[in-house]
Length: 339
Image (cartoon, helix red, strand yellow):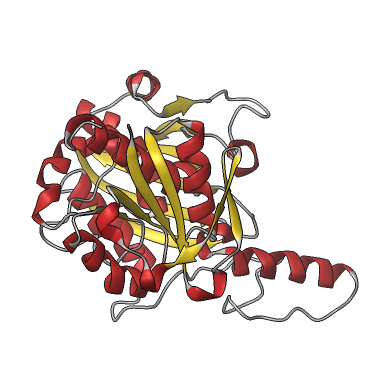
C-alpha cells in the first residue's frame, strides 16, 4: 500500500511539475488526485505515463488524502488549506500565505528538515519562495563555514514564476514585435519582451516589493534570524530559470577555495566555476535540472570578509515542485504512519 496524494492547482505550471516530479521520483503513492477550480473540471493532466482527470476543489473530500500539495494562489490556500488540514490531511503549501505564520514550518529539506517535527501543530507546511530556496541552498554551506552577516542579492527571475499567462504574454509580445504589432500588457506592469522589470509583487511602504521582503524574512526563518538580507528582484524575459547575483559578508574570513569546496560537498548544489568563456551556468542550461548551480565565485574586496557568486536554478523544480515533493518524501519516511 502507498499514500493518497492530492495536487491542488494541478493545471498550473507548478502543479503540473509536481505531478511530473512525483512520478519521476517514484513517490510511494497508491493514488494521486489532480484537483483544480471548477473551470478545469474534466480536463486531463499527465502524471508520468498516466493521465489524470481533474476534479473540483470546491467539493473535494480531503479526509481520504494523506498529503495535499497546494500549487494554487494565496487566496485559494487561505480558504482550502485549513479545511484540508482539519480533515486530517497534511498540507504542503507553495503559496506565500502561511510562510511566516507561527507554528507553520518553512522548509528546505537539505537545510532545516528537522523543523518538520512541528508540522502537526497545524498540519500545514510552507514551501518557501522560489528565489529564497535557491539562495539559502547557496548560503547554508557557507554559513556553516563562517556565520553570514549580510547578504545583498539581485535576482533575474523568469516569467514562469508568475504563471502560464505570464509566459504567454512574453511569447505573444515577442512574436508581435517581430511583425511590428504594438505589444499589449495584461499581466506585467510594463513590456516584458526585450526588457527587464524591477518590480515583482506589490510595493510596500518602505519602497521594497513584497518579493524582496519575502527573501529577507524567509531567509531568517529558514537559516538564521541574525542574517541581514537586502534584495532587488527583477523580472526578465526568460521563460524558465531564475538567476541571482549574491554578495555575502561574513563575520570572519572565507576564502574562495574554502567556499568552492563547501558548496561542492553540499547535497543539491553543483559548482560550475571556470574563469573562461562558457565556464558558468545560465538559466537556459538548468531547465529540467534538480540542482542549484553556482558559478563566478570570487572575493568581494569592498568589505573585510566578502564573497560574490552567481546562482541559477529551475524555479519550477527546486524552486517549487521538487522542494515540495522532497518535503513529502521526508514526511513519509520519518513522520507519517507507514503504508
